[in-house]
Length: 130
Image (cartoon, rainbow, N blue to C red; front, side):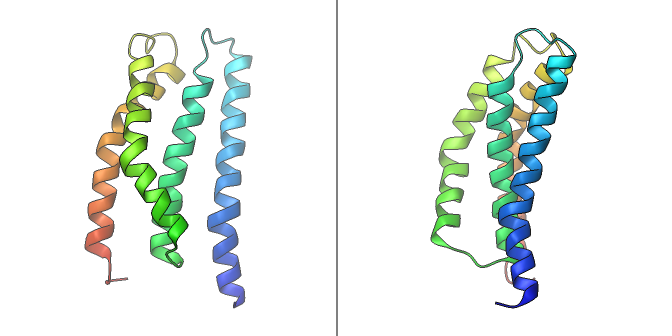
């Protein structure tokens, strides 16, 4: 492996997930500081997992080597995650007026059903051109 490949691999598989985890923990702490009632912590975690997985798949497709594990991630993101995100959106539908966190949890849960097909189409159209 070259130095460039090592940097790309570390960025995609270590740094990006670590940034996501740290930002999730920052949001969790911020909700505690703001004393938000009925915090959507679990739902936010699921949002970070699903959108983070989507980011990892896109970066793997664009800059790294495809693997069986990446294929498993794609199957999860296409077949399971929309249902998970639908449940996240449904659980926050009535709570979206409580706080901005509830509102964004609801919006991001719904948006997933649009974001995934759009990203899939764009990656398919870009395939072979990069």
